[in-house]
Each structure stands twice: as C-alpha cells, then as structure tokens.
Image 1 (cartoon, rainbow, N blue to C red):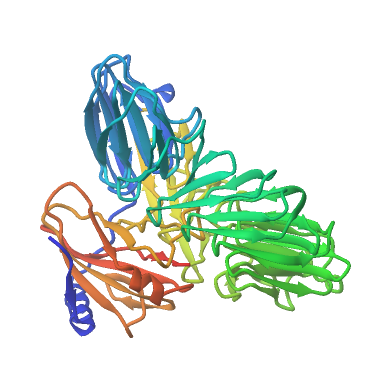
Image 2 (image 1 turned 180 degrees about the vertical axis):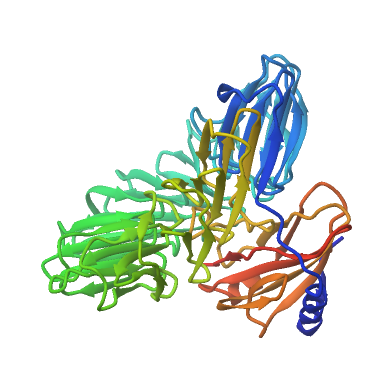
Length: 625
C-alpha cells in the first residue's frame, strides 16, 4: 500500500505506544547451515551480496533483505556477480537477482544470447544482454528486465548505473534508477560514434559533437566541444580540455558548461572533479556543481587530493578546495605532511605539529584541539581521529566538530578509502558514527587480539568465538556467536561473510531502509533536483511507521525500544504495510531534497510485526546536494 501521511504528533504518540513492549532491532546477521561442509571455493561475495554454491542451487544473501534466497543453478552455470545484482548464465533461462528486492527474475534466451557488460566491471547496477534483435536490460534497483528491439548494427555500452544505445539515427539512454530508456531521435545517424558509460553519465561522441545522457535527470543534452580537445571523465562528469577553451558536463546536474578556461598540459582526474593548469593558474571542474573554478592556486602547485577534496600548495600557502561547495580557502601555513580521503584532507600546524583538517562539506580548515598529539591522524572517507590524553577525538567532516572518546588504551583501525573508524580498547570495541557524530561501543568477548577487516562501508571484527559487524550506514554493532573456528572471512563494500566448518554467516552493513544515494560515505550522490528513493524491508504482515526528519547529534532513548535520531520538530511520518517478500520501494519528491540541501535527512521505522514485539529500525540518512 502507498505511504499514508501522518501528523507528527500522531507519529510520536504511536512510537511511544509501541515502546511499551520491550524489543530489539533484528540482527544484521543471517545464518546458512551447510551440513555437507562449507567449501571456500564455492563462496563469492561482492557489495551487498554473498553467494554459496551448492550442487543445484545458489544460496544468495542480500544485505537489504538480510536473508538467504535459494536460486536454481546447474553445475555448469556461470555467475556474474556485481555490487547490487548478479546474473546466472544457465542454458535457455538466465536469472538476474537484485539485492534490493531479494528476488531472482528469469530471462528466456536463445543460444545466441551474449552478456554485454564490460569485462571486469563488478560495480554495475545494470545488466545488459543481447539476443538476436532484442536488447535486455536489468536494473538492480527495480529488479526488472526491460526489453527493446534493435537492428543488427546497434552498439551499446553500460557501466554502473547507466547504459547508452546507438542504433542508426536513434540514441537511447538507460537509467538503472527507474529502469527506463529515454530515446533521442536524430535527423541522421552519427558518423562512427564513440560510446562511453560510467557512473550516471553516458556520452555518444562523433567528431566535435557530443550527446550526453544523465541517468539522474533522465535527459539528453547536445554540445559542440572545442576542436582539438581531449576527453577525460570521472563517474558523473566528462570534460573536454586542450583546445582554445574547455567544456564540462555534469550528470548530477544534467547540463553542459561551455567556454571554460583554456587547459594547458595534462589534467589530474579524481572521481568527482578534475584539476588542470590554465593561463591564470590551476582550474577545476566539479561534477557536484557542474561549474568551472579558475585560479585555485598558482601554476605548478603541489596537489594532494582524493575523490572529493584537494589541498594545493603554492607560495601563498595551502589552498583547500571543495568541489562539493565549489569553494577554495587559503591556509597560510601548513607543514609538508598531509593526506586526503574522499571529503577529508589534513596537514599539520608547523608550530605544534598537531593535525589541521580540511572538510569538503564545510569548505573550511579545522585545527585539532590543543591537547591533540603531534602526529599523523587516522583518516576515513568522512572522518579523522587523533590521540588526546586519556583517549582520542574524532573529527566530523559534516560539521567540523571534534567528538571525544575516553579510552585509555587506544588502537585506531581504518582502511584506506573506507568509512568506518574503529578504536579497539581494553574491554570495548568502539566505532565512530559520522552521521550522528557519536561513538558507538560494544563489549569485547575474546581474550586475544581482535582481528579486523574493513572495506568501504563495512567492518568485521573477529573476537574470540564471536564475529562483530559494523556498518557506516547503520551506525550500529551487531554480534554473531560462532559454533566453531573461523575458516574464512571477507568484508565487502556493504556486507560481509564468515564461515566455519558447517555454517556460513552473512551480515548487512546497510539499514533495512536504505536510500538510493550513499554520499559522503560512499559513491552515489543525491542531486537536490531528483526524487529521494529508498526501500523499506519488512517481515510479511508487519506494519511500520516511517518517520522522516532532520538528523540530530543528541538522540532520544526510548526505553526498551531503541534510540530515536530524528528531531521532533518538523518530524513527519507515513504508515506502510509489509504484504509480501519484496521490500517496499518508495520516494519523497524533489521538493524535500531541495529543502534539505546540504543537510542530513533521516529515516527511521517503528515496526509492529505480525508476531513478536515491536522494534525501532536503525537510522538511515541522505544528504542532498
């Protein structure tokens, strides 16, 4: 049933009523018994999916539904595994599984069917299959196949969340977010077009004419780019540099920006922006804003950058550049030691040696507290941390705040371009929830050293006979007792797995109400001009109250029920019912995204199951830009 609006006072009253019964949010873990023994070679995992292969069945775990689903597969079937979906290539019927729906959908094929995704691409949410004069596209976000007729001379390219088709005088763009094709009829066919698809941007280039498609905006734009220019691209943008002027395209905005500064030399390309030399100094193009920014620093400045942030050092000092805010700020004196990850960068104060952080979300420098240790900080995609007497402080890129943790025995655990920030203490495991700017802790149960694994948004800690999971999108720990020694484990971007002799355990690092967008913890950016899509996974027969509001950094504990992380002021709610195995896909209009531009919109559900006690779901948050 569609969501029903509810007045905030009714929402809060309902939450309080449900809280009368003691309850606990369901575990992030699911268990698959394997009586014949788990064989490591039969395990695969990627993104939100874990797969165990049996004699005639694939048992597939979805981090959204948090359960295993059996899928028929012959011993000769080929499994194409991606972050959000998988394809079982098997005889005359191929099966596509969506992590968002937890369902496998068959596709009848002939012997000439071919899988058309790029070689080695494992992050795609769109699957492409060509079969004679039929082109089939599967969306992980809708869990559906879409079929269209093509000629024998068609060309197609797809990657991540977009695909592009050229077929005579027709161009078509496919967006995985809604599983729809958007056609563009041309007067005449393009002359030997070059197709490029990645992130949410797709391009068809013929000579100096470029047709661009945005899977966020579902629109086509045409632009004549400067003659002699060179094409470079990131996930959600393309730039044409090296001619008499520059041209850029942002699929987040769905628009070209022509007549940018003339580029000199080769560009430095990051996931969400590009830097290049121009006659007035170093310039940039940002996919977030779709604009060029000139004279960020002097020509030849030293660059330290990551996906969405950069520090540029020249004779004037260090320029912190935020492609998110399209702003540059000068710090007159930073030491030579520095680093960057996604939206966070750091240097050192040359006098004290203490870290100075730069946030691409605030577009400001933030010096560490005066009692911080004079050493390199720990760094994640959204946070940093440094030692202080008696513990540590975490730096939040969202606000620039420093959040203390009292813990005498601090051991930082981070992993490259990943979101979790863990601290191992003597008796507790701590994690920093960057969304609520709070520390979350769980009791250690082992006697030896914990064994951590972190990748992207998921963290796994093996602690004696217990496995602990933490998700940057959930802000919660979840623990799983193990029946025997661990024989293998792996953390993926949004899920993880552990196996013993006869059991496979899989855990989710996403809430049961995930948003489509993931930034800043991970890649997908939510444009303020697009609808806010999310899913609600409920047990059959359950009724839930979905509350939407601003995320707060001081939670409201509800005894026996959980923590509410939404501000009561402005809270709205909708009533939803779980009527079957499929999670409910719903959305808020773009006007809501605009109202929360640059802010944190939160979602939590209060669930009344058909049997058992009610429970409060984890916080899910999204940041429109």
